[in-house]
Amino acid sequence: MKLIILNDYDQVGEWAAKYIRNKILRFNPGPDRFFILGLPTGGTPLGCYKKLIEFYRNGEISFKYVKTFNMDEYVGIPRNHPESYHSFMWNNFFKHIDIKSENTHILDGNAANLVEECDSFEQKIQSAGGIDLFVGGIGPDGHIAFNEPGSSLLSRTRVKTLAQDTILANARFFDGDMSKVPTMALTVGVATVMDAREVMILITGAHKAFALYKAIEDGVNHMWTVSAFQQHPQTVFVCDEDATLELRVKTVKYFKGMMHVHNKLVEPLDPK
Image 1 (cartoon, rainbow, N blue to C red):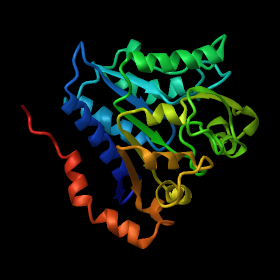
Image 2: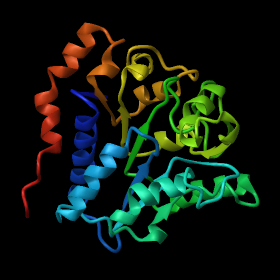
Image 3: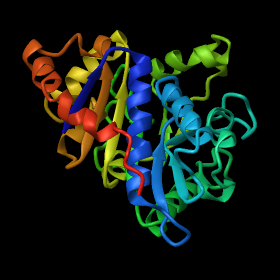
């Protein structure tokens, strides 16, 4: 496990975007070999998406041979609703890069059979060859995707009832009105993300400091689903200073002492 500690939100977004850029470039995708990328929504990854768009516009990277799978989607709101995750991804990322629409995969919260939609999503991931890098964020209660506290760490893509804290946190996107926030969602499971060859979790802000503590210093616990990634062979946590406030000083010092090594992972690659 790696813990990358940066000064602020902007640096987290930039580091994460550079890491994704380098992973794709090293993979060298092509027509018969796509890079498979798992993606989140929410405020935390926005800085990363903005940087990736910048890299694309600068000619540093192409997404032509990248396939994406998103973590989750609300149940029961129209696909074109401004707060649907389909709208979020297209408005904030996909429409600004050269990815083909058929290579983007977002769960359909209006499917006639939601269970079949979830099963189909798992099958599509398998058919694509599995996910090379799954990027995620977490909630203040340590949930990954919509795997709320108490979710099985062996869970797969499924229908999930949202916790009251999650509904409250998301009300800001619905005019502050909790009654407008969907109460159910489709979400990848913890095991779905664990199956990825590599996982990168972005965590920013003091309000997520206790969740980061639970993620890396406490034991694996289904009440803090992000803690499952302690057991993943290739996990990178990327956080800002505020998110480290609940960590032991020794822990912070240990990981900061390795930043000179970890920063080499995001250095520009030599052109071939």
